[in-house]
Image (cartoon, rainbow, N blue to C red; front, side):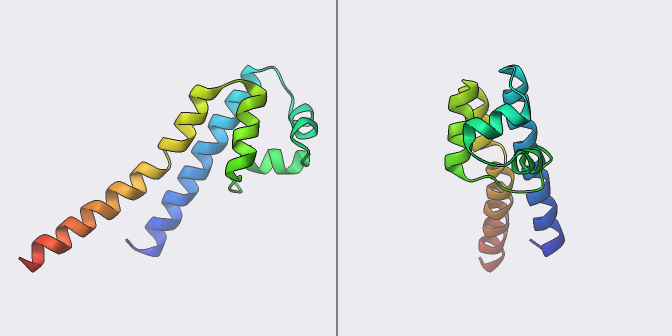
Length: 101
């Protein structure tokens, strides 16, 4: 996988994660300011996560979902961004292995 493709996949996964977390926050009726106070982080950090500009830590995401009580989104968060990267790597490995035979 080339660097451009990897960077694009990472950007897409961060945007997807941000979308899930934003929806969980909104569905719970919390503002970014309220959530930042509960999570003990800055409002700017919440904004950057929701905009897909930074990768939140696992513990922050877990706490976010505890606060918003949106565990369904938590499992979507865990599964979606990882699978496309895994699948491409797996396909590439299989092609490489098959070409050797």
